[in-house]
Length: 153
Image (cartoon, rainbow, N blue to C red; front, side, top):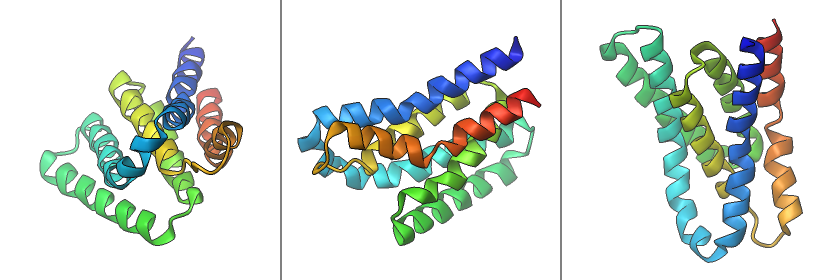
């Protein structure tokens, strides 16, 4: 039963990529102005997930807060420097492990929001909806693969 719950939670969180793409498709005018904020919001959401994970592991706030801040800064710098969709593969790999370890709805909600932001950042207004739906799902499929493997072990 735990395996089924984990896989369903994994699929719901992964659907954030699809929902983000669909929202981006219908709000193209606002998307242009919003992308600059989404680029800053993604590291913040990732650091919140990491902070929640450290809190789940009972790590002291004196350690977890600075460590989460460092994660946010490093991810932001890495994201700005590379500007490729593939840089999220590592982030989604870590998120799959965190989701399994915490199995909490708070982490799942943050991962869903991270997916919304990720799909919005990589949405290409010059391409059609089908292309934009396939791109983030294809690039971050490792999240599902790792999550299912962990659930089945």
